[in-house]
Amino acid sequence: MSDAAPDGVDEELVELTRELVSIPSHDDETAAGDAIEAWLRAETDAEVTRDDAGNVVARRGDADAPALALVGHHDVVPPGDPQTDDGEYVVERRDGRVYGRGTADMKGSVAAAMVAFRDADPDCELVFASFVGEEVGGVGARAAIDDGFAPEYALVAEGSTDYSKPGVTDVVVAHRGRRASTLRVAGESAHASRPAEGQNAVYRACDAVDVVRELEFPETEVMGEPVRGSVAVTEIDGGSAWNVVPDRCTVTVDERTVPGSYAPLERTEDVDGVTWEVDQDLPPMACDDDAFADAALAAARAAQAGDPEHVVKPHATDAGWLSEAGTTCVVCGASEPGEAHTDTESVSVDVLGRCYRTYRGLAEDASAFAD
Image (cartoon, rainbow, N blue to C red; front, side, top):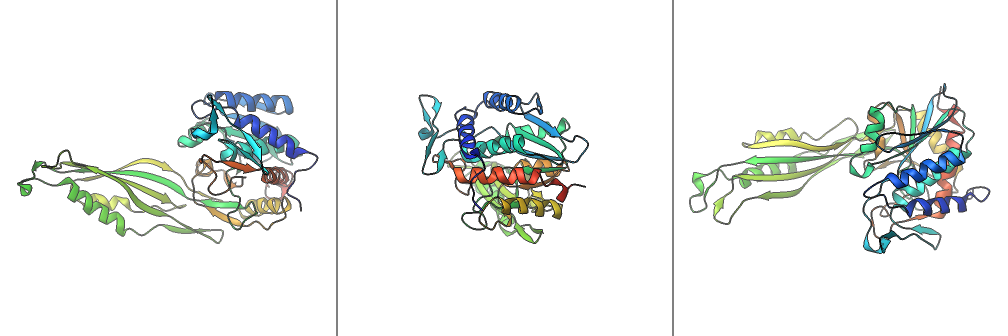
């Protein structure tokens, strides 16, 4: 099957992607949200709302049926120097790809979801949602959930292209989360010429680092796919002068979590003077419905010539927040590994069409998974 979208939709996807990418949204997502809201109001007869956080949500179809949400975000990380010109975002199309900040992560997939939302003939309640603040910890998703956003199912349009093999867009059934921690270590200062009179906070920190080093990585399995976490010390800071025994030290720990399991970092507090603090905890995601995961994979297979698979994604997404709140999720989108957040960020035009077909196909086959 061709990856192209039907009836000239490819060009519409490119132009909509270019329009969204051209709108700066690394400091303030308002203008990008305005553009998405205006397009939905002009192109669909959906009920479109904008909440206080800036999230854009649209609904159409049978409100009494289970809801399927196509979910994205319209904030981006700050652009690199090659991606701006006199303060404007640079957007270019060449060699079958669209280049610019946010093309891959994830305004290209947002555009595909918008057009699929418009064109689908759903046999469910179909929801489109584009959140703010995904890049800073899921601010928009959490606000929407707190405000009652609770679809039964969601396809989160983050990247899943080229995961199992080159040239396919896969369906993610699980992803890791991220827990960021700080170990705060207290000691007692003394003159470095008489170290025994103090308690060296750096030595205690090294003992705590040894505890972290020996921890086993958490592991689990989702729909036959192995999910393995990781734990790593990434920063250490302590001491005030070359001749003073340090009375304080901090250690930063990056942990990639798996559904249902954490590394036992509390063991570090067995070391004298160590206090463990969690700074950020982005939840992992595990799809809890075989029928939904299979329907999404069937839609992805019908949308492309390749043979996509159920896969695991290493990065946290807003699917983690939705899954934690009770929504059954998968992830499927245009971004490829190594594209997001780079100075050469881009998205394939063909893959945009592929995502459009997948999203539309899943919405039109909701009877395969929704009771």
